[in-house]
Length: 82
Picture 1 (tube, one colour):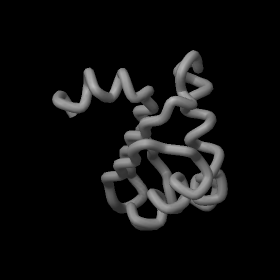
Picture 2 (cartoon, rainbow, N blue to C red):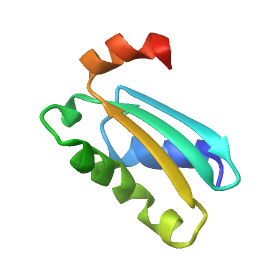
Picture 3 (cartoon, rainbow, N blue to C red):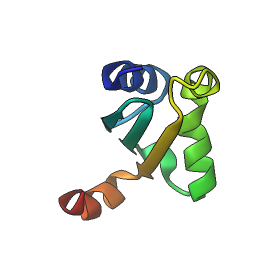
């Protein structure tokens, strides 16, 4: 699985302001930004992002996934450090 395919899946399934995917060889890092994450727990945010990628995780096309799911306000504060 490549970063372009992951990005496309996430953008099709979720309403995102920003989607950044990095990584290779089944190990990926995802940063997603959306108002939908407002008032969600960290676990719920991760579940929302895992959802569209369930098949890829089950097939081991993705075997490690680091997720940062942020609101636009959180992104404005953190993007300079990422």
